[in-house]
Length: 394
Image 1: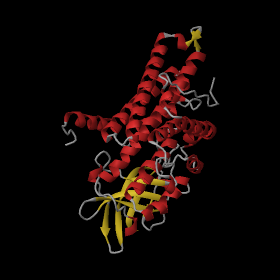
Image 2 (image 1 turned 90 degrees about the vertical axis):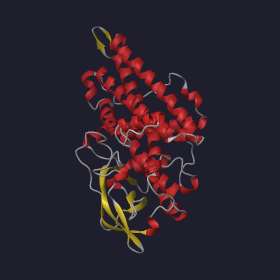
Image 3 (image 1 turned 120 degrees about the vertical axis):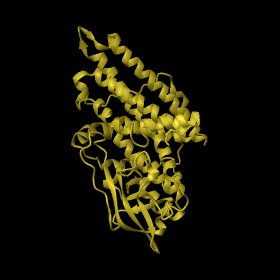
Image 4 (image 1 turned 60 degrees about the vertical axis):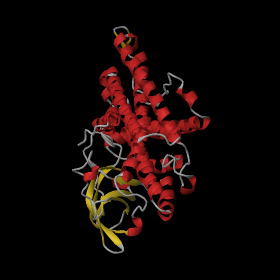
C-alpha cells in the first residue's frame, strides 16, 4: 500500500492559520505546492543515492527562499520572519537537506554579508546568492571545535594588501558546490573576524564528506585553507568577535525551529493516513488505543510547537526576540519532531523503514538537525544559564 503521490494535508488543530495574514498563507501555499511538485517525487531517490539535487538551487532562488528577509534592493524578498519560518517549514516537510540548503544560504551567508558587510560587498554577492546563481556556505565548526567555536584554530595574518588564511572547517553544508564561503577566523590579536572566500582562490578546497547516514540528499563537505591569499576588501568590516557568527546562528536556529515542525507534520500525516488504511486483527490499526495515544500525542506536540513558533515569529518581527528564546524553540522543535518521527516509524511497522514512505528519511535527517547549530544539550544549558544566571559551560 505504498504512497507514491504526495498526499500531505497540513494539521492545524488550533486554527493557527487564523493568526497568519493572507500574504503568509499565499507564501506558505506556494512553497508547499513547489515541494509537492519538485521535491517529493525525487527526494527518496536522491537520498538513497546520497546525491545532492543541484537543480533545487536555481528553483529555490526563483521561489524567493534564499534570504527572504533581506531587503529587495539586494535581491531578497523584504519579507517578515513569519514568512521565512513558513518557507522553512514547508521545505523541511519535503526534506531537511532542502531546508538546510536554504537556511545556510539565507541566514548564514546572506545575513552576515547584509548585516556586517559594506555596500560594495552587498551589491557584489547578495543578488547572485538570492537568485541561486551562486551557492554559499558558512565556515565556523572545526574538526576539534564544535560546541566551543571560540577555541577555533583557523587564522588570518596580515600580509599588506591581503591576509593569509590557514586552517580547516568541517561539517559544512553546501561546501562541495559553493561559490562563496563566509569563514570565521582569528586575527593576530585573537579576535574573530569574518572573511568572504571565493571558489578559485589558490589554496582553497572543499572535499566532500562521504558515508553519511543522515542528510543524504544534502551536500556536506570540509573547507581547507592552505595559505589562501584573501584581499582585505573581502573582510566583513562591521563586526568583530563571536557576536558575528553567533548572531548568524540565531537566525538559522529560528529557521530550524520552524523547519523541523514540517518534518514532524509530514510524519504525523503519514502515520494518520496509514492508521486508517492498515488492517490488523480485522480492523484499522487507528482504532486501537495505543495507536490513538501516539497520534494524540503527536498532534498535541505539533500544535504546541506551532504556537511557540508563531509567537517567536511575532517577537522577531518586533525586534524583541532573544537568542535564548530562539534556543528554546530550536531545542523544543527538534526534540518533539524526533519523537514524532520515531513513533510514526513504529506505527508503520516494517514499511516504516522503506523509501516508500518518508518517515525513516526524516528520522535520519533529524538526528543531524538535533545536533547541528547547537546540540540538544547545549541549548538546554543556554536556557539553564538564562533562568539561573549560573554558567554551566565553564
